[in-house]
Amino acid sequence: MMCIDEVHSQHDDRWDDGPSSSGNDDYRSSNRGYRGGRGGRGGGNNDQGRWTRGGGPRGRGRDRGYNDREREDYGNERGGFKSFKGKNRYTPYDKSPPGVGGMRSSGGVFDRIGPREQRGRGFNRDQSGGPRRDVFGRGRMGSDNRGRGWRNDRYVETTGERRVYNRTDSDMMEEDSSSILLKVLGQRYDSITMSLNLSDMFHDPTLHEHKIRSSMFDASFVNTVLDLVATHCPQLVALNLSNNRLQRLQAYSSLRDKCPSIESLDLSGNELHSPQELEAIAPLPSVKSLILEGNPFRDQEFSSYASVVRKYFPNLELLDGKPLPDPVKFDLPTNIGTIPPSQKGYLVNEDIRSLVVSFLEQYFSLYDGETRDKLLEAYSDNAVFSLSVDVSPQQRGPPLQQYMSSSRNLARVNDPGKRSSLIKHGRIDIVQFLRQFPQSCHISSSFSVDVMKANPMCTGFNVYGLFGEAGRMDSPIIRAFTRTFVIVAAGTGVAIVNDQLTIRNATMDSVKRYSDEVQAHFSKSSAGSVSLFPPNQSAIPSLQQQQLSAAQAASFNESDVIQQLALETGMNYDYSKKCLAENGWNYEKAISTFRVLQGQGNIPLEAFRT
Image (cartoon, rainbow, N blue to C red; front, side, top):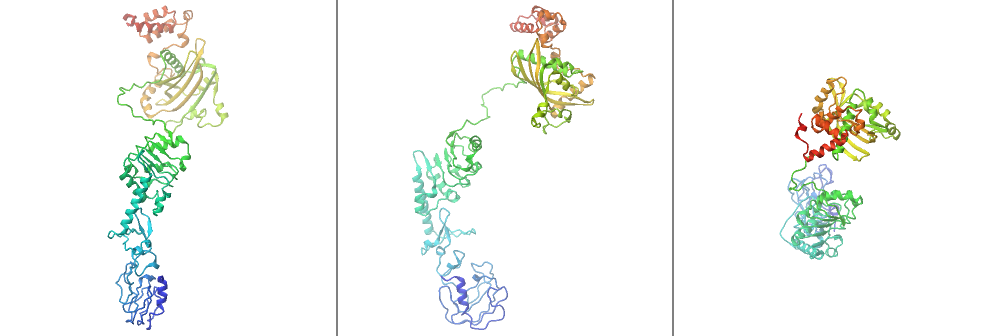
């Protein structure tokens, strides 16, 4: 077939018998062109090799030089040639109607369908070489249907143009493709297990035989498949989409609507690079088994990979054939009744509580006193002490600079040698270090105590709370602290073998709550020896005093012990003295006896009268 360029070159030699006007005679020029000469004998050779018969009048058009060969028209009506600014179907920028003498293509339709060399006589749209869309949205060459006369009713150009004509062979062809695909799905469906195997659809022999390209990542093809599945097997339980070269799952976004009862999904052997691709098909609450082996992102550790996948499939039980642990759920049953009240600390039992409370009262009374030298008796010779300062940005407050140089915060001190040098060893070294800290007062009502170890020889516990730090008289500083003590039996009492102190700034709520109390303490006595412990705990004796025998009690002030027992039991002075005397002045035994008798209801009411 002769192309358009060849038609122009052959026609130019014959069409003009008359003289041309001045101007550039190149019809592609942007200058004003020539006036047409007198029509020659049959001047012009069209694309079918036909010659016009006679001459024609002089052409009077002008070539505007749009450099567009398709804008010109060749004529067989009068034999003359006339270029014009006409608008036609394939040159949308022409404005005026065609001039006289323009050649029309005999029976053809000039249109933007198919290659330029195939435009011309007798080429219907189905023969133009352009693509058409079949039922699966894939182009096929219209030349296969030449002579059938169907009107390209489903053809959609890349520009988005759509032409719809009457029902012709294309509709029947789409119906044939749908029936073939339905046949393939029927071959791959197991009615017993209600499972559909769509693995490796690209190489399905039936689809290849009928020249139907099955791209399982193409949204149009996938939607057709899912529509057929929803229509013919709505109760589908298992779906296998393995080995289909899937890189994304966006085409399957309607899976949750068209296959709502699916319980098993196989996506193995594809090319999914991220588990986030599963978001396109989630949520699928009915899915209990999922296979993702053979995808690039599956290389990561199973536990972390499983937790990500479970976000999209919350009811998943099997992943790649491995059972998953039950998901952690925080929804409580409705019939649990009343939630138990929260406990402030853990003290194991009453005996441990008595020991710990007594220790804390005595220790912080000495720590907050005039001098901390008396703390020498609280530590063993081999005791160790360390300080850590928490400077978290979430806890703003007064600077902690006086503590920073001695801080052994392992998150900030990396050098092993420096870490070791910041540990204080022995009672003298420890107390000398504690003397450097500002004067303080600890607020016992803010304390929370947790016992972590308790036996007759060793007790370990943590205490959390607040303390006031002496600053300006009008504005004392409130700090928060955590302290871990390990105490052991030593003679008739106990001694500290390990002491770890952490200091940080208190929260704003804590500062507002306790600032008046701390201010009152520092204003009450310049010595700062007033304890903020509640009155019923302020006079608890040391463990040495609690465990004194009758012989040792002779050298001890009996009145103090009697008053302490009276405060703890609520008995008056006389009955407290009687209780101690009958138990050999063993304070611990006296307390134990009192609790037994009180539980039996054998203590008279007059014992509690003042």
